Length: 351
Image (cartoon, rainbow, N blue to C red; front, side, top):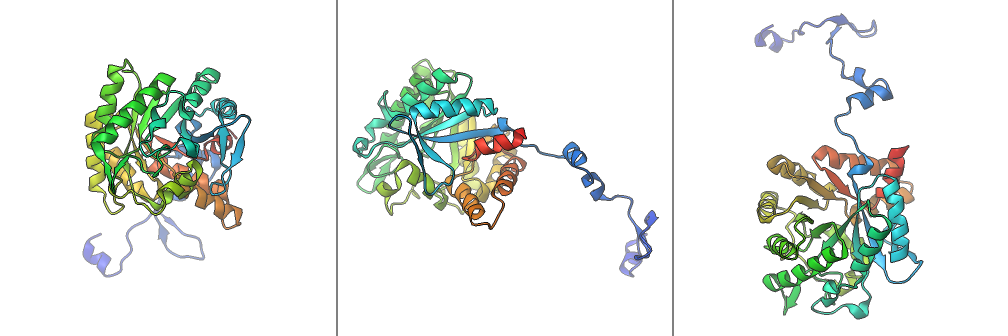
């Protein structure tokens, strides 16, 4: 049939009649056929979520036998080192491959220079040693950034009103090396200083840690979704009304994310990450398509909290929307997801 005939309102040829209630014909292709049964939907699913896709971020605190709920992160606790080691064993049993450790540094140990970051006996290093001793089969990732350790709450060193890039690199290098010495498997720089991947890679290699992986927070945006995380580690009050916009990315920019990722890959990153997650799914897709690198996404504290809070208020089914959100990250191109829902999600996936 020609275009002229279609313009006159003629119907294209089709194969079989509709029901008597709707006279006419219908195409042979019916997309609903493949949705008829649960087993058939599973068979044709284009993406799958598995426990092996999940990384569990954990908050470690001083003390023993301590499990302290975090008010702004429903269902998430700060854990003492011994409790963390126990929970890491549970995560491993559920098939979660790795956890990411974030410290709640006591206020008296925070300084303007963040020196506690490279103390070989700090909370992070003790937690890494404890987890690796108790559950050697689980991977441990460490955040390389100064904000949990600085009295001003910034990820880098402050000189006047400026976060100074190159001096911060020296501090990050020392931090990364002590984490590697403690047994950290994946160093994850989240500071967004220029050149930090190359500096850390060189330092790790010099120290004999050529086998340690670097997962770069390559496209990390200056986001308002980080609030509950800052509450959890106690850096929010230190930062106050301060802004990280001079070193984290502008939410308006997409092409710039590709430049950031390209630089980090060139400097030696083994994996790259986009953060936050759900508001930046377009960035995940662009990064994966452009570089075909192992690409991770962080479902950050604000994303997690708003879904959980809506569930608590009866506005949403929290479990269902969480699983839908996590699958959405996979569909966008993520190879793995950092999420505070890792344990619950892994339990649901196990059935």
